Length: 260
Ligand SMILES: NC(=O)c1ccc[n+]([C@@H]2O[C@H](COP(=O)([O-])OP(=O)(O)OC[C@H]3O[C@@H](n4cnc5c(N)ncnc54)[C@H](O)[C@@H]3O)[C@@H](O)[C@H]2O)c1
Image 1 (cartoon, rainbow, N blue to C red):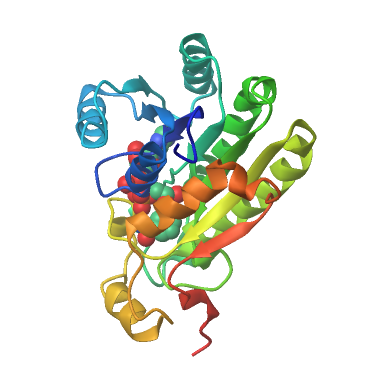
Image 2: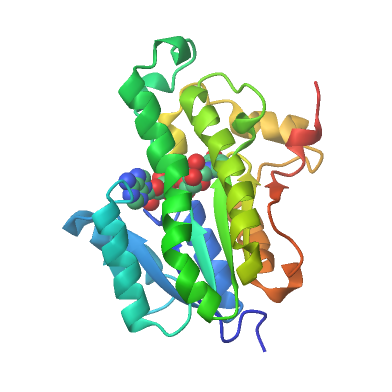
């Protein structure tokens, strides 16, 4: 029997089969979870997400959601609850910042709106989703919420800029949610993934050398693979992590431990 047999949940953030969320969904599915998916609104986005998910399993439940809209979030969580009896896990794997400000030397020039938009989509939405998931998760006996972060939340990664600030906000948001939702046996954690070539990471300037740097610097002498994060997501969604909440778990082949 799979570790996640009987568990049902929602994955937000599959743009294509290179997305971290895709690797997470693949691993969750392999361990027996039943998964529903949200994608950005629009026919093209629906087709792209659907095509990627069909590489994992057939007949996916897909729903459009712009996480920047409260109305759209309400529609997603209402539709999910109507079609699914349980909500055992929620995967938040979304982020956004205007790429113009994700270049080395541009942080101090970031306009107010671009700064706030990045925090809104990349961090506030975790709280917005957790609040909407709470009731159904509590009724399911508890659950696991996880979000994707990055080391640029703690140390300066030139070019990561406003996204680093947003990730610090995301990690802190997860801790406050963990405290508040813990009384319902809802756990909230972040996974700090290593650099992976995706649509989102291609928006960050100065990342050309990241793969090579990981191979040279990381204790495991390689860059992270999506499957590494997928396996940690299985652990977090499963009862194996029943006592783990409010944590930030590095899955980066150890690169965060290196000082020079
Ligand atoms: N790729 C990396 O190196 C890396 C490393 C650590 C953490 N992360 C994080 O992993 C998560 C997933 O990113 P990825 O690298 O897989 O890239 P990706 O481009 O595949 O995924 C980003 C997702 O965010 C979604 N999104 C953006 N704005 C949205 C909105 N308003 N409403 C709903 N969805 C929206 C996109 O549709 C997309 O599916 C992000 O939080 C990212 O910061 C990525």
